[in-house]
Image (cartoon, helix red, strand yellow):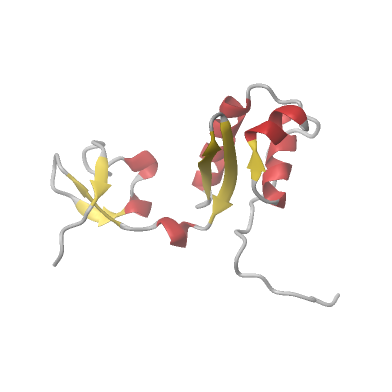
Amino acid sequence: MTQTALSFDAPIFPPNPYKPDTQKHRLYESLKSGPISNSHVVRDLGIFNSTGRLSEIREYLMLHGIHLNCRRIKDGLYEYSVSRPEDRIYPVRCDYCDWIGMSDDCLYGRCPNCTSRVRRDTSEG
């Protein structure tokens, strides 16, 4: 076997955990190919509850350190893509208990000490 290319840009996806021929399986495979729009999900994949399915896939990917991003293109049209966690790690602070850490330490944007919401820490020093 000869490796012809090496790419550090695309995240490495964990195996598809969903049953073949299910909506989540088709959606997960489409995301592995690159960014997709909600229009593609409805028209080409025939999935009408795309928000619910994508939320479940987002949770699964988050457990593996991959982020599922949603970007508004125009009214009613959104693009979904994945990114590596290194692109999304930044300092955060909990206003409730003054905990300071990094965003990747906070599952669902919650403080690991008190479970309050954290915000991006913009203080210097």
